Amino acid sequence: MDQLAIASTDRPLVKHFRAVVAVAGISLEVSPGTVFGLVGPDGAGKSTLIRMLATVLAPDSGDALIFGNSLVRDTEEVSARMGYMPQRFSMYPDLTITENVNFFARLRGVKKAERKERSAKLLEQMGLTPFAKRFAARLSGGMKQKLMLASVLMHEPDLLLLDEPTTGVDPVSRREFWEVIARLRADGKTIVVATPYMDEAERCDQLAFIDAGRITRQGTPAEIKAMVEGTLLSVLTTDPHETATVLRDARIAGVSSGHIFGDEVRILAKDSALAGERVREALHQAGIPYELNAINMDMESAFAVLAETAPVQEAADA
Amino acid sequence: MTEANAISIQNLTKRFGHFTAVDHLSLEVPVGQVFGFLGANGSGKTTTIRMLTGSLTPSSGKAYVLGANVAKRVAEVRRRIGYMSQKFSLFEDMTVEENLRFYGGVYNLDPDEFAARREYILDMADLRGRESELTANLSVGWRQRLALGAATIHSPELLFLDEPTSGVDPLARRRFWDLLYELAKTGVTLFVTTHYMDEASHCNRLAFINSGRLVAEGTPNELRAQHNGATLEEIFTKLSTN
View (tube, each protein chain N blue to C red):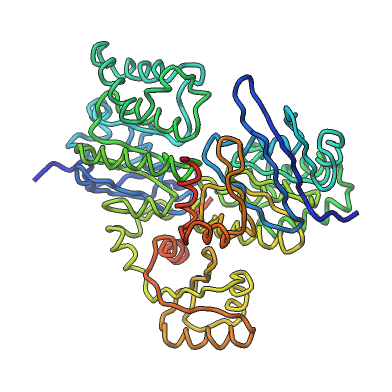
């Protein structure tokens, strides 16, 4: 069997910032050639975990094996096979795309001949070739993210750590970015990616749901959705806000997580037949026309339910 | 004076050298609406907002905000509008209380007014008990609600929100939109840019821009009907790539 890209040790990773527990003990196993997604509420510890795996932040305690090398003891070996893309744009605004890519490759010790060949190939893959001479400051959000990814790939890492790479990027550029991720995966790269977008979470092979510094759930997207008990009901109406208010005020037993999703109000019901009956009564009384359907669980709803029901630790919430 | 439109712009244009960021944009936003302003990165959304808030002078065209010509009555316009961006203009090394006081001072609120608004915002943003906490120590969701509080401390009639939920987790995003609806119910007009199409579908009306030009406008349902029942995501892709 292939060596794991990330393997746990018997000592889970821990990181505190003064009194705040950012990562309370996380062990992670990631198979090579897969996309592993980290999701969870803001402040759950996703970035801290990624920064520890990227060797830019030393854990207070614990260790993990990256392609068999200790994160703590073999930092150089780990770093050589790993590429880290931080959340903030970290390229030089007054350098061009080509200059930025070459600068970061040089830092990584990539030889001149290889730099030329690889940067040409990567810029082509990212669709950045026509803009190679443009200053980084003048790039759109989507192009900036692709430039960062190209820079991170110059030393041909096997493991990529991406911290919310598409935040603030428009839907079209987001899709393009994920097409690049799919290609990297097909090339055998391992990708660990934190994301606040649930449509992106759906595209991962494995997901870890992180809350208060711990992994509270892990599995494929389908498995994660199956962990939410109950049936998702969709109430399609012309006035979703009024409908949500009416349903909230009706305080229907066994119903939780009423939320608006476009023209729909989605509610989670323990007993869908019983809840459906009460929903009909409430909306009929209020004189609101509606259409009621049971629908498949979506990741967005699953996230909301898991975030609301996951154990919350006061200290790590801040 | 009551105005039917919170925003009315005619042929608004902004050029930077040879580059036209906003190109003869005409748009009307009725009072009291939640208006979604959509487009790809670099399509001219932020430039438009900066012209509407008086921080950038148009190359040509006219912009009326709350009935006032922005070019001529910028001080009045600024007093009556609020602005919140993805960067949450808060001072991280100040406490919640200090941030609110700072913005109260910016808008010259008298002590009684400030006290009333402070109470309202602490409740609205669920920040009671955290007044003396350092802003840097708040989670993103709380910081975002505080930023909304700071942006609305002077009770603006029109609020500009430039990607207010970028990078915010799904649950916090949902709670934030609940707050926006509360605000809309009180009659405040909201002009929102977002890259989340589920948020776009919550707006009363939408405008799509591409290369600084208006390419579509209507209610979410009208737009979907015009595009044979396509999702907003599909419509966005189509309008952004043409």
